[in-house]
Image 1: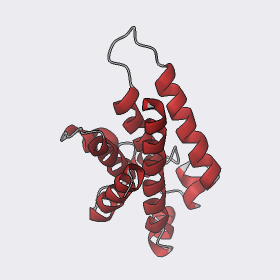
Image 2: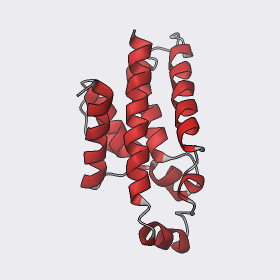
Image 3: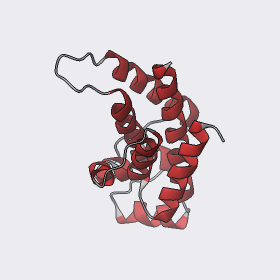
Amino acid sequence: MNAPRMAAKHAEELFASGFFCAESVLLALARAQGIESDVLPRIATAFCSGMARTCGTCGALTGAMMGIGLGSGRTAQTDSVQATYEATRQLINAFEAEFGSRDCHSLLGCDLGTPEGQATFRQDRLGRKCAEYTRRATEIAVEVLNQTAA
């Protein structure tokens, strides 16, 4: 199995185990880069469910952005941001091209910040969509990181 698929499969497994979108993606991308830390899911938690159920950017996408940062982010104030920004733009463009949006409420068709949206999420089994976003965001991020490293 290739690296993007392996990382995506791991993200799906994490999501199925009870981690949310951003947590699952960040953990899978960190593992793919040889990084392990108890801090990682905690960092990502607030980004889950469209930025803490505020109808913001999809948590899977923000988790992937953090994962890209792990691989290409700055370690000093004088380092350039260009490579990370370019990789992040590639990720966002690919995600939006595939799914038509980057925002959680548009992707799911409901507002997770309301009781009605929560009911719709459960009733329509929208977690299946979230699992797909989690899988693909991870896969796309690994592909982008591989291009950046090449």
